[in-house]
Length: 145
Image 1 (cartoon, rainbow, N blue to C red):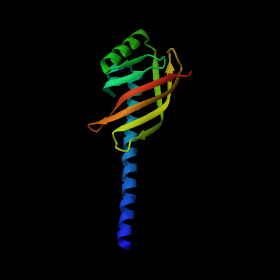
Image 2: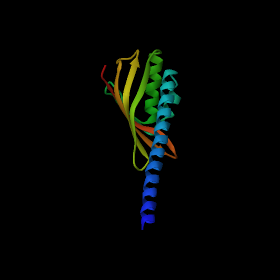
Image 3: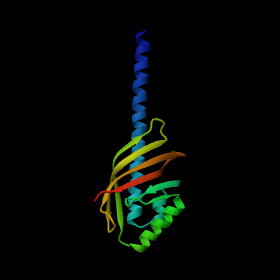
């Protein structure tokens, strides 16, 4: 009987360790994607920014404007960079939580803006995992500064 109890304890501990390791990997993948997205914004590389979005991406900007659909939002970013060659946005995640089924993630943090209508604020993002790749499904920015 003691061997069975030990086996269950071992399997339970293994499951917890495996789940945490998988979460850590997913969190690092999202952090890496966020850093690459920030670099694409700094480079004014709209295709690079959009490569992290789902096709049905939804964005609520800090000025309360709302857009959905990757193609529509790409056009807005192109116009922004054309009209304001010095604009820069940087998002800094403070927390990333992976869903128990490993298909969704929630990211929250702060964003800073330079040469823009706002100096920044807070944001949150919803990530979806598809074909083992994390893509941003929705982002909400709130201008606070």
